[in-house]
Image (cartoon, rainbow, N blue to C red):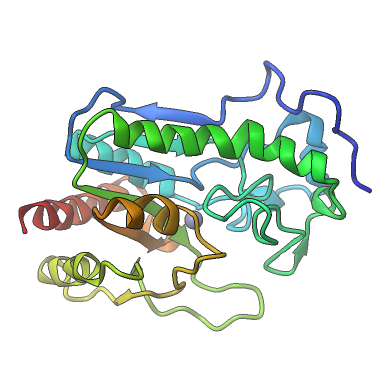
Length: 256
Ligand SMILES: [Zn+2]
């Protein structure tokens, strides 16, 4: 059993804290979240045994999502919660204990450091990385009334052996279709050339998602998960343009 780190503290002072706040004191009515912002791996996990550079690819994090989320938070003066560890260490948008929480394979890449992980080692990742983010989200809702919350992600144009995804962005939800639909309508007015979709390239599922089923829906607030194709976020200028488009759509959500 892969029990290398069990019994020792997984995170050391040289590892980053799992959660970073931006505009923590903001009383804005909207809360922003970026669960896949970071690609850090605790030093004790020895790079999860991955080949050089693998964690820098889309399997390790949401490329460009942190810059987009920061830019959006600045435009809205809204609180933003960023998660610093690679989703290959533990995916903070998946329910703990599910296969996707600590993936053994991601887009055909085997993650040696996750194979046959002991329950104790899995629980330690939950306790030190997943739980603090979950507590931060609860704090973000508790400290001020929020009318809306959005989680910012990026996807890759083409998965290994997968079909090319034609969408430039997708807006994901289960129950709050009214909010998701504001985005393509608002964005298309400024950028009719964009290919936008609802519930693509992913769909929200009870056992495959955390933020929407466990935080947004139970609170009855306006919400969706924003997925922008990472080739749209290739430069500061492109990120700023997307942040502007999304900020205007969020303003529209808050006005309606
Ligand atoms: Zn993501």
